[in-house]
Length: 200
Image (cartoon, rainbow, N blue to C red; front, side):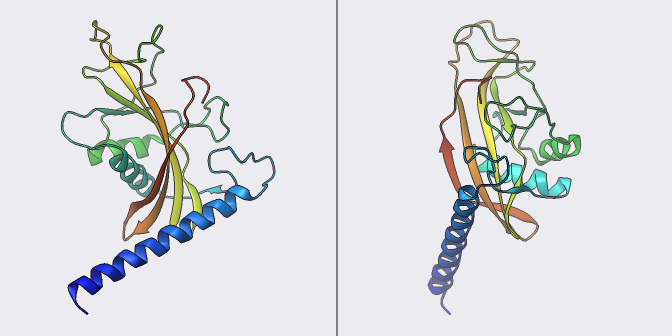
């Protein structure tokens, strides 16, 4: 088989996996699980039981897909998990070991539970540099080797910032990831409509 044929075969295989994952997610979202609303994060899906290393690898893959992770970019993790139900208060925490592994991977640089800014200013984090605070959801099982997770990212301003030059920015994305060896690869992502902080 030529190199071109191999590349085409791998591309087709990836597309098939992506289509299968999307079909599974749509089927799960259309199911009316007990107490599940179709707008919930991970609607119709159960939380995946993954070791801390695999959780951190999935989160890292999603964040690398959303950001150009490089020196100078600061990503801080909100220690509270995104609630499954939109509009509900966050009650669960990201496991400390998962946060440590994310930091060790070089994708994130610590945690921040942001304090609300005044007016139209971004929230505040105790940090030396401006960046984004990311809030992660549980990881939901779609299939044996496929998972789904959600992440919001919000621009923050550091406590040292007295200029207030940055305008607020907040977005949420949904990711579908497939297992690749010991890690995870994002095969699909979608930007979601994100309400203001405190109502998501």
